[in-house]
Amino acid sequence: MARREDIRDFLSRETACVLVEVASAAGSTPRDADAWMLVSKDRTFATIGGGQLEFMAIDHARKLVQGANADLRLAIPLGPEIGQCCGGHVALSFKKVDADTRAALIERSDDEIAHRPHVYIFGAGHVGNALAMALSHVPLRTVLVDTREHELSAADVPGIETCLTAMPEAIVRDAPPGSAFVVLTHDHALDFLIATEALGREDASYVGMIGSKTKRATFKNWLLREVNRPELFERLVCPIGGTAVKDKRPPVIAALAAAEIMTAALNCHLQPRAPTPKSRRSIKA
Image (cartoon, rainbow, N blue to C red; front, side, top):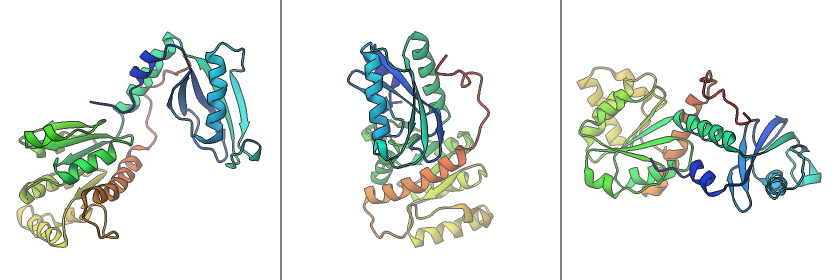
C-alpha cells in the first residue's frame, strides 16, 4: 500500500530530529494531548495543530536539533500574546529522537494505520477513482475494488489499495466490523448484489450506492422481490453525496460523498478502545 505519510522515509532521511508532543491540553486548543510531530533542520512530519503554536514549537525544536541547551518542556497559553486566540493552555515536550524513539514512533504509526476504518469502493470508474482520491487524504484505509483488471491498472491513487476480484460480495463478507461500503460499479445488477450483502451487515458504518431516483426505486423493488427484506433499504444512502448540489461531475460527487463517508466511518471508529500491549508503549520510552 502506498502511503502519503511515510514515517519510515522521513526517519531514514532525517538522522537528526526532535519529537514534539502535546503533553497536556486544557480549554480550547488546536489539538489534544498526545498529538505529535517531528522536526528536523529543514523538514517536519505530522502536526500539533498549526498556527503560531506550531511555529514556536518548530523554532524551539530546531534549536535542540542544532545542539542548543534549550528547555525540554514549554507551557504556552494560547492568548493574544502569541497571536493565537484559542484561549486554552498547552504544554509541549521535546525529545531528541534516538534509536529507541524511532522504533516506538514506527510502532505507534503502524498501530494507528492498522486500526483505521476500512472503506471499500466498488467500481474503479470515473466516480470511483475520484472518490478514492478524495479519501486518500484522510486517515482511512481505502480499498478500490473491481472485477476488471484494466480499470484497476489505470487507477493511480497514492495512499489507497486496489483489489481485483471476481466475487466482490466476498470482500463485503470478509471486511472488519465498522467498515464502510460504497457501491458504484459498471453494472446495476452487480451494484444490487453488493449493496444487499453490505446492508445485511448490521455492523457496517455506511452503505451507499450511486444512483438516481429511478435506480433507488428499482433497487427497493428488487430487494423486496429477491430477498424479502425491505427493512434493509432504510439503511441505504442513495444517491451518495446527497441531493443538495445538482452537479453530476465525478469530482463533485466524490467530494460530497467523501464528507458523509468519512463522518460515518470515523464516528463509528472513534470510540474508546482498549489499547493493545503494543499500543501501550509510549513514544517517550
